[in-house]
Image 1: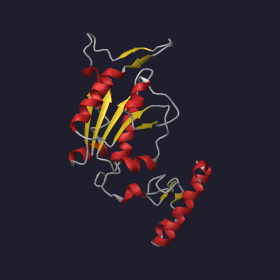
Image 2 (image 1 turned 90 degrees about the horizontal axis):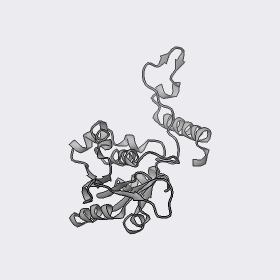
Image 3 (image 1 turned 180 degrees about the vertical axis):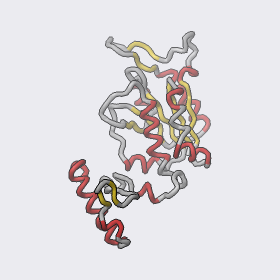
Image 4 (image 1 turned 120 degrees about the vertical axis):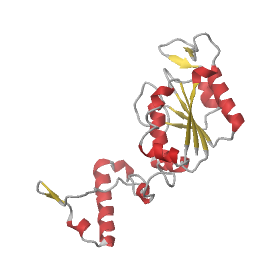
Amino acid sequence: MRIDIITVVPELLASPFEHSIIKRAKEKGLVEIHLHNLRDYTKTKYRQVDDYQFGGGAGMVLQIEPIDKCISKLKEQRDYDEIIYVTPDAPILTQSTSNKLSLQKNIIILTGHYKGVDQRVRELFITQEISIGDYVLSGGELAAAVLCDSIIRLIPGAIGDETSALTDSFQDGLLAPPVYTRPAEYKGMKVPEILRSGNFPKIEEWRHEQAIKRTKKIRPDLL
């Protein structure tokens, strides 16, 4: 998979992609991540990529021209399955969305900044819009990192035990059940006996019951 990220501040994305699962996925050749500084696509003296919004109001808006130049240059080099804009005013990211995106080959992610992007960018280029939650960040870079992490960890080979991702929360529409590790007893708190029984059919039944119970308590909207 190849992911191209268009950003005004690529420095914000340098660290998240150089550690843990994403780093290993890159080293294995499972994913390529390329950062594109939007300021490289403007000829203005101060590398300006934003301007005041028509109609007045606070906040600057990313201009269409440098974004057009960057996306057009990338599309000349290869076909893209999705061109994604990460923005608060979009459908919330779900596990199902990440599952589908993990099957794609080439993706562009456009990160917003300031007050967002010129609406014509969204109408002309964007094939999918994604929000990571009902809140606003200073820019879309951290949202892009979250999106990339949720996708890349699903690529076969990215994590040691590929079945692990299949038992995560939301994969079956439920929250994950409680998990325990050694010691079996700590400060009087014991691991449930069923998990130490070796009866795997019963263990799976217990886990499913616990997943339903946790979902009802924490996220009843999922049921």
